[in-house]
Length: 158
Image 1 (cartoon, rainbow, N blue to C red):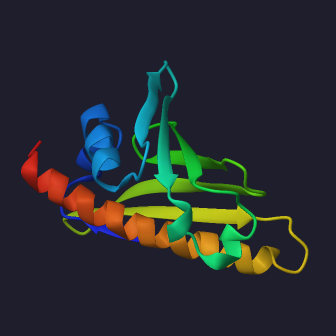
Image 2 (image 1 turned 90 degrees about the horizontal axis):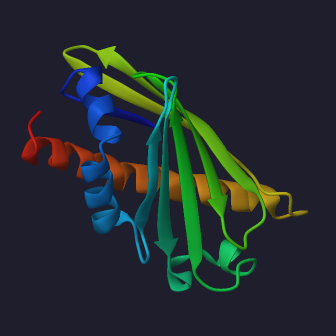
C-alpha cells in the first residue's frame, strides 16, 4: 500500500503514533470491541497494540468457513524510529499469520507511507485464496484508515 500525505514525514509519524489519533481511528473504523490496548515507549522503540473487531457476517465466505464467529484482530506496530516500523497481526481462531513493514519517506512537498504486508495461511488447496482475501481486505482497510488519517490531520493541525 502507498498513501500520500501533504505534510512532512515527521508530522505523519507523530500522528500515526499519537494515542489520541489511534483512539479516534479505532472508534471510527475499528469495528466492534476496538481499542488501543497499549502504547509503550522505551529508549529504542515505540510499541503500539491495537485491537479491532470484524463481525462474522462481514467476512468473505472463504474465511467464514474456517472461523467460528466474529474475529478479533490484534495489530502490533513497533516503530524503531520516525521512518520505519514493523507490523504483526494476530487473528483469533484463524490459521495463519500476517506481518509487514511501514516506511515513511519524503515525497515532493509531503510524504509517502509505504506498507508492505505478507499473509501466510497454511491450509491445503485454499491457503493462497485465503491469503489473497486477507491482503485484499487489509488493503481496503488501509484505504479507509488513510482517508480517516487525512481528515483527522485536517481537523487537528499540528
